[in-house]
Image (tube, rainbow, N blue to C red; front, side):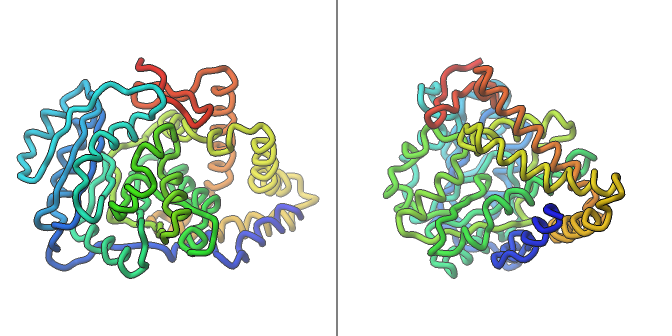
Length: 371
């Protein structure tokens, strides 16, 4: 009964976190003038994807300035960048990671001196933009009078585990950070998707530049919070026209991606972990066990029905077969297990390892060593 009431509340919340209203499609028109935009792309061991990323980026419009910071790559990333042959590209060879910084933010900080245009696009090196998406994002930012607008990149969903977990990851993110509330000027909720962010350069400077994010493992949402606290509006939405090029075919690939920041998301709090566990068990375990037990079958069926109904818009948005809504209870249990894994890693003093670097998430998360 409690689980059924919980899912009914999720469906009836006025800000509708399960909906996919906040979305953006690329502009089908001719390439726009981009002389007011500089794109900043941090790259670390992205030889397989950086050429496609830069080619798609250069096709967004005329006179777009592109700044790539090579974050001490050990593969062929630099060669791939040079072979792109883009006329308005600036390549910066990154310096060693200092203590107190996370790798991506440090790379971005080294390119900050090149941000000499009114708008700055922060783009991951493994993201491919469809033609006209930057034009559409500029228009959305202007229409919303926002200081920052970001898009949640569509990750590959070809393999079994990708289809089970990637749309669920988006779904849970929207439950945790309802887009309607994040986009509302008077709400305290702030969220951004770090793979594709367009913002006012002056706003970045006003909040202290990338130094204000130096130790943040969840730098995108921190950036959105700082911009919103500064009095500017923000906008975050979904898109199918910014595609992630990195595959996550194995369960372990997604597990490590989520476990990297899951416990940090809970502020490294055992109490919040306990609350999260209780809610996730009530939401995803109770309906399945109740249905199997038989005595609570009616309420269990109501809970499962409401759960699937809340998840269906996400599955439909990503053009997956409706049968994948049945995977949500499994995804919920796995994400809870990933969160506990993240907590155990922290309690054992392992810190966070990502892209060959280890970080200590305590006190904001300091980059401490290179493995």
